Image (cartoon, rainbow, N blue to C red):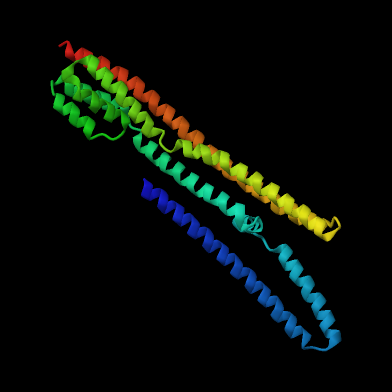
Length: 278
């Protein structure tokens, strides 16, 4: 699972870097085209130059206005405008948080089994006085419920009370494994918006410094600085919302597994008690 987290993190960073390079190349190509058009226009006579320049500018503005941008392109542009400092940190928080969340979802999904079917197979083996067969069924079944059953069956010769103690002790260990990494997701959920707010505060300070240097409250200076400052907060909140959805799903999945383990363990102990009295 650690290799999975590392692979997802590296892949996400490489994909984002490639997107930024592609966006920069697009911008450079557009700029080069505009410069070439302007240079060829200047080569004509002065009257034609003015007319063509105005027409070219109007056509370019119309084309830019009519150009449809996808959500991914808009997201990249806004992310780049937010600056590499806090935006990069928020991106890393999102990558690591998402990697841990995906790893937990896969682990918990693999841990989910049909516990009633497992209990039925164990009961069938015990009814045939086949203790080793019951152990083999548990060993060949994945998931925490099967592991708890196997631990209990290994202590069966010591009595039902020892089996109950072993199930309780091993159940705590299994629950800890299910909750492994969840605290990190909770940390990233709290960290993402805080980083965003910090970036906003720093951006506002820079905007006011620009106003102080200019000596005048220019709408362009104020609007640009405030936009860049607020972008970090927006992306921080987006990261927190996405990770919160994964976190709630993981918690609900863990609660469901723990509840299933408790119910099935009670039925398992009753089964062993019944089998020991034969």
